[in-house]
Length: 147
Image 1 (tube, rainbow, N blue to C red):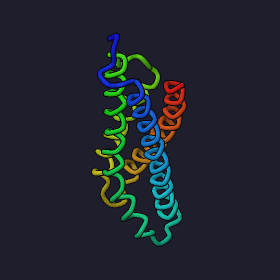
Image 2: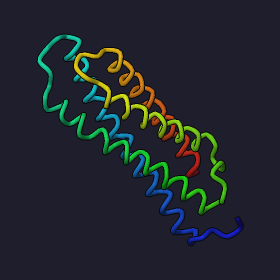
Image 3: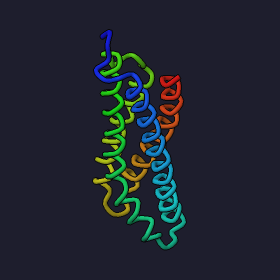
Image 4: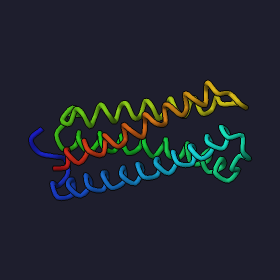
């Protein structure tokens, strides 16, 4: 594709907005992870569960899943408009695909947690930690794509 479908200046600004949006999503996921860790620690200590943190974690999770998937789809769209090749930035793309798959898996597992089910809770925890690590990698790959 020789000419982008929109002006180069607008495309450059949209890429920055995409990066800013997804960086905000990363920060929100770090907060979500902090909530989850606080809940997990209370369970392990057999202390009273932090009801407000549990409510926030449950309420905010699905919203973050949608926000993460939306950020990925917008990024793919911007690359397609700019270059016509979604593999223009392969590390960024495949890390994004892995994040989307992990988001969906984490959401599905979270819906299966009932009562004191340590297997599902441990899986949810492991998926969440993996997600956070991949999101941090994705930030660096995204900065590389912008530069």
